[in-house]
Length: 149
Image 1 (tube, rainbow, N blue to C red):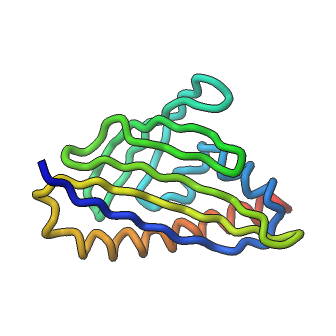
Image 2: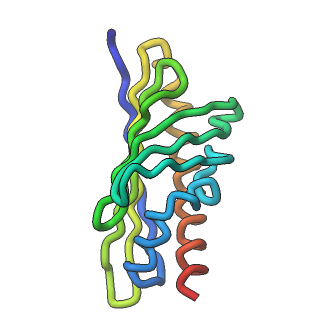
């Protein structure tokens, strides 16, 4: 079966120590506060470094629910969909990089693998995802700066 892959990546500079940014990013309870497509999240850690979470929300106005595995990494985390909407596989995460002494760059990436029948929607999907990612990074930056105070 043919698939279409959509990858969206963006970043934001944050006036905060990288260790504070990493702490916020790795605390998955904040996911529903910064991810515009998520209204609620239930986290089930297996160890300090990995586990799973279930998220519910709206994607382009449509309700959705998905389960994800996650892996904590030294500078962020990576997650991958275990189950979710039919015809879609999602993975993504965050990486925090030191930029200056009191500044860091937060990089966010998302990868969508779509079934062939979603191909006609790819252009609109990219526009929606790019806008959502900009909003998400701004919300992440605000949370990091609040946590640093």
